[in-house]
Amino acid sequence: MLSQIPAQDSCLSCGACCAFFRVSFYWAEGESMPEDVVEPLTAVYSCMKGTNQKDPRCVMLSGEIGQQVSCTMYEQRSSSCKEVQAGDAQCNKARAAHGLIPLIEIEPVLPSNDDGYDQVC
Image (cartoon, rainbow, N blue to C red; front, side, top):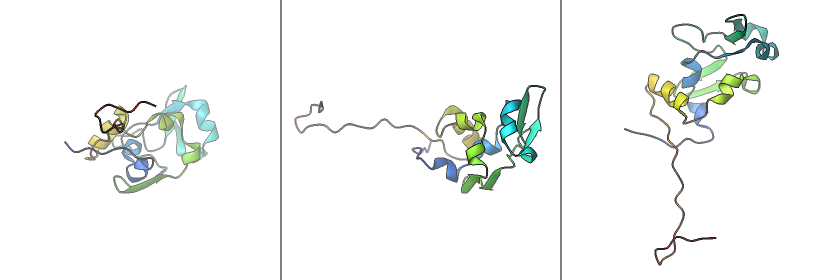
């Protein structure tokens, strides 16, 4: 299976999570967001418009998934959005649903001495 290493800007070419999950959060968190992008979900929770449907896509997602995307309210995004990290299980589940290869973390390899022993600082 193909894979790739997540980079700092991996999300800028993906957007899969924004078009796969319902983005829900405690209702009070929505008070700091533009009114026309939040909808009530229950008495306690709200969600981003566009994400509470069969084929979710956040109304604040701009661009083409897997090509180039942006969140048009990135600085005000919900705690739910902030929890998903490039290469985590949620990210890769959304990427798979959109036919994108998974992101993987690779442990850095430390350089070794010519004598075959690892260098210790």
